[in-house]
Length: 241
Ligand code: URA
Image 1 (cartoon, helix red, strand yellow):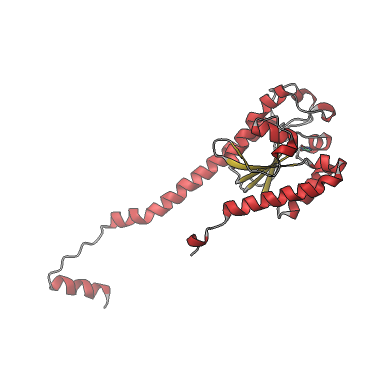
Image 2 (tube, helix red, strand yellow):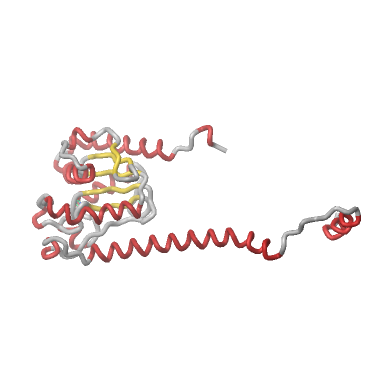
């Protein structure tokens, strides 16, 4: 029946119909638009906070490393991604180019990540504990870590990765607040920060270049990390449509 005729018919038989007023209909229709607007605002504010943090890092003078670096190295990768890889500190090539892991160790890291389907241009963010190069590629000093780690923690807070993979002893020990040796930290899931982000530990690619026999163990770690990630993101059978 045509809608208008149906209304007339119902009126004729004494049925009062409640018809939403135009304003109510309009605000109901506007609700999803308002939600979309709020989501857009939140995303824009995240982007702004990310860029403000990048600027802060690039201008940082919290420790004397700013005197010897060419530039700060913030990180690389899409800001929205599920994986975060954390290394130690920029080396000579990274300092020159402003991007983490671009030297020989970086090429190996890229190959390792590719083996589990990750790519710094697409689906993994890569950052370091220190944003400035320690001269001569020495280990970071505790006071340098103390000055710089808050930046990485803020990056993690904004990225909210589903899984963190640390490469090398320095990254693992500083994020987990432990001095346990790397060998004892491998092969288990740790949890980082207030969000309890799962964290898996493996060798540093520079170490693997010097000790290729341990590449097999690194491959075990990567498969372990991939399994942890798959379990985190798997939809339980009962919840499938
Ligand atoms: N080693 C690291 O730990 N990070 C880099 O960015 C490069 C080498």
